[in-house]
Length: 332
Image 1 (cartoon, rainbow, N blue to C red):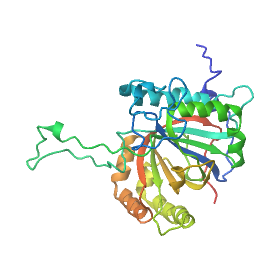
Image 2 (tube, helix red, strand yellow):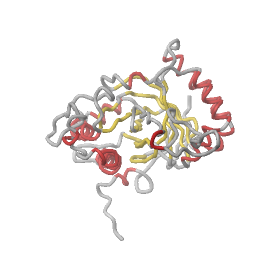
Image 3 (cartoon, rainbow, N blue to C red):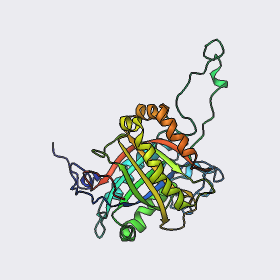
Image 4 (cartoon, rainbow, N blue to C red):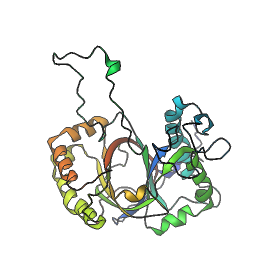
């Protein structure tokens, strides 16, 4: 059967896309955290100016008052599913597509990391214990005992890598990105961050097709400078993580992203000092890793470095662009 891949993102990743070996030097990554368009009040979730577009192309300033005006999905009951589908199946191919006069070739890797509420998070970590009384019985009135849901700050992460920092401007200044991709972001996303980071790959992925990521957003404790925090995270904490047997058993990839600036005004992203990303083969592997004694050792060491605002959550991985293979550990 002949399939037309002409405008598909499949052309930008293996097995159809061409790849080359990485140099081992740190890549520059824009870890763009995204929150989805929905009917949450602005006071509960920030909103970028010009985002949350209506079907007429105008910002819906009060989406909790006018959810039916949102262009992406007018039915709040379908908003999450429609957004999740749109990001992967519509926005991803648009980003990869080289329209006349544009090119995404300087993007060496672009992964979409979609947060999954049923996966482990810092707000609801494993183990998940049955709700029972003193006799070991489940409650007969569960409708009165539903745990509150604590939504993380972000719904996902666009993990976009470049060979060097200047390639960001060379790519994003093209009309396609500056006008049409931004317009698409304003349709699908409520807010996006704009930080620039230096990537350190500590455990390279064998195929870069790992199913699940554990995303840890790090905000340093107040008495540490950003430079001191990043140095300790990379030199001291990474050694501890790598030394744990559970890391060798469960972790398929481990990378740290260290904030070095931003592409534009970035009130939320600028608060993030670093991001640690661990890849796994399955969601159960994430749970077993976090529940292990080694996972507890890692968590205790992190707690000594982190301040308010730090969080973690779990996500499904989608590779949209990948021009680097095989992945190798960063030299530093």
